[in-house]
Amino acid sequence: MKQTLLQEKYPIYVAEIGKAETDYQSVDALVEYYKGKIAENPKVHFIGVFDHYAHTSRIGGEMVQGLQAAVDIIFCFGFAIPNPQMLAVRPRSIGIADMGDKFIISFMEAPMQPANQAMEAWTKALRRQ
Image (tube, rainbow, N blue to C red; front, side):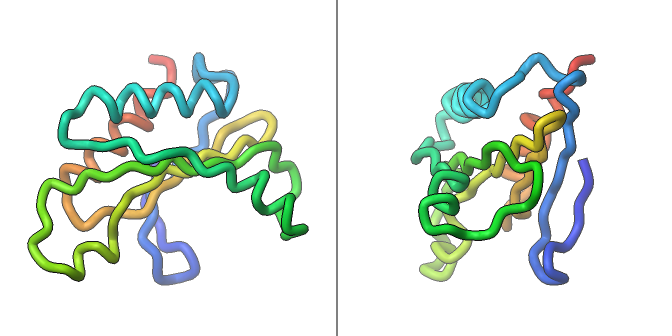
């Protein structure tokens, strides 16, 4: 898993996981995995799944070559609302892109460390040991 800046301003975490490195072989299986991880934590709330691939196809948008599926799992870690501006960085999402032989999983850095630690641990655990 690596940390990088997307478009030189968005701090994101990215993991490229070959399908040979994981027991999960479809986007649907990965969605169920993450939904299970979200459900295990009583302070995290599952919101939904956005099929970004279907949406972009429907509007005739551009997509990277080789992309076979793309979804965002949307959820919230919102432990507190210390100020109204905190709503600008919530909820969280984890993106899953199926590139045929591998998955690219990404998420934006959260403003609170426990959320980053959880999302990173969930994603790292996808690789077979």
